[in-house]
Amino acid sequence: MAGKTIIGILFLTMVLVTTSMAGTNTYVSLKGNFYIIYPDDWAQVDYRLVDAYLLSDKVDKPILDYEAVFAYKDAPFFFSREYLVLTVDTVGDLKEWQIDSVLIELVRSFGKKVQYNKTADYLVDPEPNLPSYDTLTKTVSILNEVNGQGQNLKKNLLMMKFYDRGIATFYFYSPDSTFETSKFLFERIISSFSTENVEAALPKESLKVADLEVGESAAGRETKKSKNIYLYIGAALVLLIIILIRRLR
Image 1 (tube, one colour):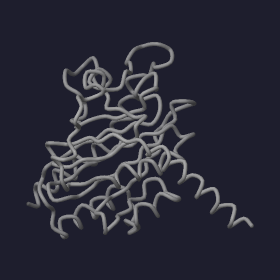
Image 2: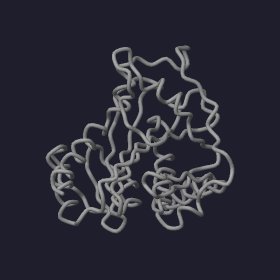
Image 3: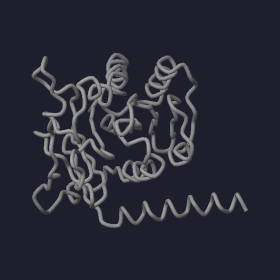
Image 4: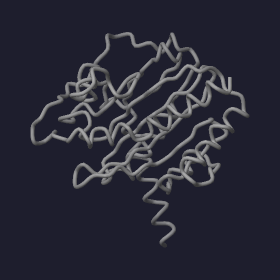
């Protein structure tokens, strides 16, 4: 009975996620020449809001060179609930031995042997700081637990997608309390990645952005240290990998 109960729960979860993706939006990356599909109750966050969030008092440039950020439309602040930071590095099509070098670097960074799993299988019960590589989709997945307290406790799912023009990196963030559900949504977003008929996927309407805020109210206040923790997780690692790849070319 226990086995049937678990299967039933997983089935219900997948049904809920499928329903949430019933209405969808499309984002086209002209730089990366690909597109992704994300839920209708999400929207692309205005770049000005993201920059305001990323900026600190000591620098005049964002701490992360991002392509786009996506979040729930009804979130009071885009970082209040689940959100996605997308970056693109057009380093070109990587050969298998170059990808192997990246995986070796991951082993050095985390001290754990890379597992070879389908992304969906890995997400059933992901182990923090254990890199997983899907050879079919050429996707690396790494779960990071972000330090925090109460509502600020978050998890970061870093997913690197190797494709013919380089690497698309997805920084998914979720409150710890909702990660078990949102991880399946994250997997569906990255599974929608496509380089086929990109021009046809261009939105016919003008870009809609989330009507969110960045401020210092009690609901949205976070220390700059916490912000840096959230958005530095994985960023330094990806930068190291990009440098490694450029050296190998």
